[in-house]
Image (cartoon, rainbow, N blue to C red; front, side, top):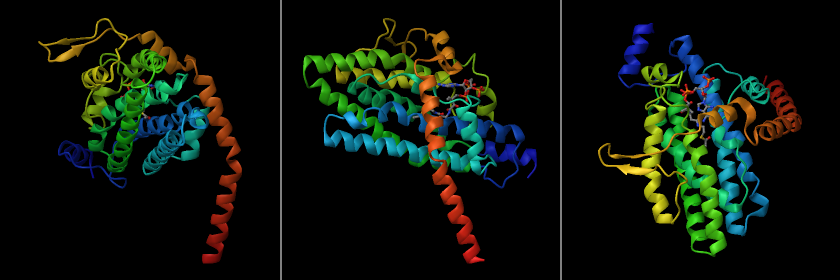
Length: 307
Ligand code: ACO
């Protein structure tokens, strides 16, 4: 396949498959984005896993356990998708723990109360769905197919979060205060998940041309704000933004300016939990070395038997 065939294929909304010819930059961009996505799923297990042993009931514990396990599965599908592009999983993990590859800024914030579990489900997984549903139509086949299953599971995660919050809002005054406090802390970081504004986004233009990204960061952020406002009203909470209001002319909600210094500081490794998250991941990886060694020894013995 030539570069022209590749461009024609992508513009015709068809899928690029692992054995197809592709520009080096397309391959590099995909490995970067999918690896960052995979790392986010894996690091994203930590803030919620924090609450598994302290969930207030067996039912909540079972739900949370299932959700955190789903995130591990998402990470694994996504690492597998990078392997179809020639990336090496061990190398990606090394880059993550050495701070040479990014993961989502959102997972560098602490989960202080059980209401955070609900808010992470509602807002963080809600933002993830908003960003990821269009990726079911991304141009690279293995990534698009992985996203279909991931989005179904994310949708369950979002609903469990919202249901948890509904339950807390029907509880005591203290529980309602806890929910509002968690919303206040997670709202802005959730908006930051969509990445820098379009004017500052270095990758969007090329990624849109290659149909890797299907919408810009600001388009998706706006969609998320519009979708979240009625959900907040139904729940009985407010967002910490005095400039948030319906703009009939635009047909969208206006909202205040994001603190971009905070965003870049968290992306740069200086958020409240960056060090802790990466240290935990590094330790888990090192502690798992014996499992990888055992699996490799088993595979090589089996190969000898089969030969
Ligand atoms: N946290 C950390 N880094 C970010 C974030 C964020 N929220 N948003 C953007 N960045 C990084 C980009 O990776 C890029 O870094 P690089 O060029 O040094 O590699 C830089 O900031 C500039 O941003 P963009 O040019 O806008 O980057 P991109 O086109 O990749 O868009 C986006 C960023 C929207 C996150 C895109 O990569 C994407 O859609 N990824 C797939 C979804 C995903 O990763 N979600 C993770 C969280 S959801 C979850 O795990 C539950």
